[in-house]
Length: 176
Image (cartoon, rainbow, N blue to C red):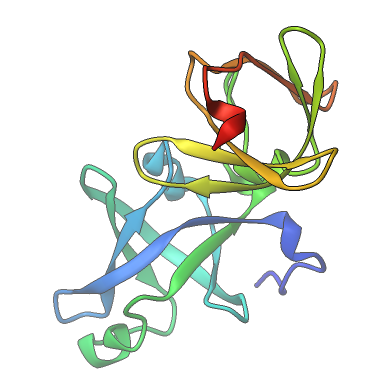
């Protein structure tokens, strides 16, 4: 079995366990993954805040973004119940390869945010996941923060290798 990774940054949150499934210890995973079917190739998942490594015996697609997991050591419904609301992580190296234009949200903090006019607004402090669209929290050079929605009308270029994001300001964005 793989030990806990040396660096938590190696791990990706893939979802959280919502409930037991059946009486044999299986659990329902509400996944955040774009390609949840990829979990069938993963051998070890990491559970909870302490990132406990557990061998993944089976991952079966159930419904859209709902995967049924069979985990080593979880053999009955009572054991599965103890995992309710526990977050599930995998190693970034075990994740499905990113397609062109895809990125991990944890790669965005620290990127410089510039306008299409060439003005530097600041750098990304964090990314808020709002449900409708993600929002960049940008630390302004002159102090304070601005919230930048990650929508096509605003984000014109995201260059991870160049460590920058180019945005087109919409009226009133900086006044909020």
